[in-house]
Each structure stands twice: as C-alpha cells, then as structure tokens.
Amino acid sequence: MNSAKLIINLTRSVRRIRCPRLYSTQEQPLQVPEADGVEKTYPPHIHEIVDKISQLTLMEVADLNSCLKTRLNIPDAPMMPMGMHMMGAAAAEPEKTEEESAPQVQSLFTVRLAKFEDSKKIALIKEVKKLMGDMNLVQAKKFVESVPVTVKEDLTKEEAETLKSALEAAGGVVEME
Image 1 (cartoon, helix red, strand yellow):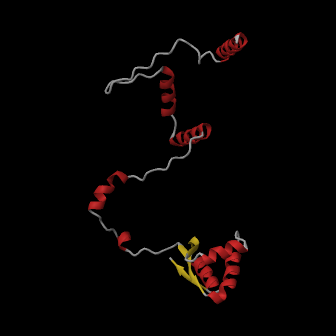
Image 2 (image 1 turned 90 degrees about the vertical axis):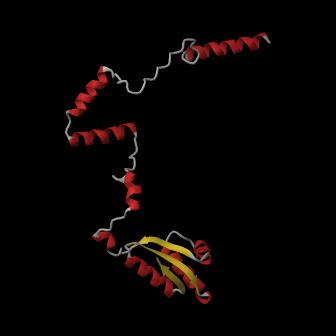
Image 3 (image 1 turned 135 degrees about the vertical axis):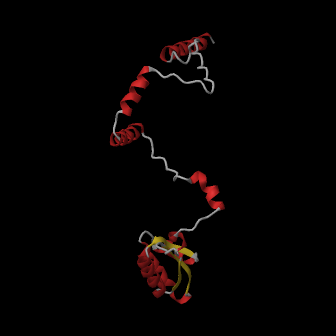
C-alpha cells in the first residue's frame, strides 16, 4: 500500500512540474466588464496599428484583408445583399420595373425520367449507363427501375434536349423542367 501512495504522489509531482498552470493556486482575477456608454481605452500598440491601416490605400487594404484571411485560416463569409433588412417593407408594396414585368426565360433545365416501355427496358438501362458515366450496369438498372427519377440537373437547353432525345430513343418517357 505504501508503494502505491508513493507512486501516486510522485506522479502528481511530475505533473505539477510539467504543467504548473494547471496546479497553480494563484488564479488571475477576471476582467471587469465595462458599462455601456463608457468609452473603451486601447493599448498603444493597437493605436499604432490603426494609424498604419488608416494610411493605406483601398487596394492595400484589400491585399491586407486577403493576407490576414490566408494567414489566420478565416473562410470567406457569405455577404448579405444590401437592403435585405428592408425585405418586409418591400414585400408590402412591390414595385414592378420593366425588367420584372418581362417574362423570365428559363436558362437551366432538369431532365427527369418519368416512365419507360417495358419492352425497351434493357436498351434504356444501357443508354443510362452510357450517359451517366459513373454508373455500372447494376446501378443503372436500379436507377431506371426507381422512376420517376431526376437524370441530370442544371443543364443548358441544348444539353437537356440532347439527353431527352437519347433517352426517348431508348424507350424512356422524359420530362424537362
């Protein structure tokens, strides 16, 4: 029993030597938060940095910003468009401009396989395997059998038309959205 207590005490002593902060009996006092309305005082080195930054050109500030993001591993934060806080007021009184009143032209399309002819199922599976590229034959079979299913999204009109015609030729019924 005595040897066990001795080992425990030695282990604690070694830990105190290696990590004195963890076993310190003196604690740092907490900073007292400042009251609202009281002007905060900054250390002199912060004032020097602010003075140097205020003398930079706009391009130099942009370079500083990107350099700090790289050095500190700060990801780019998505920017909220100006006027988003006014969305409630704008929704109450929508004003139509010439651009908004013009009909919207769809530029991106989604191709969906709605159904297929049972007699042409094998040909359709082979065509899906060929068009999708990253599918093997078993995955293409499961894909075709799980209709209705989205084949590809965000295609231009020409790409969507080409895909649609290829699938229809193989026996599929295709919808473009």
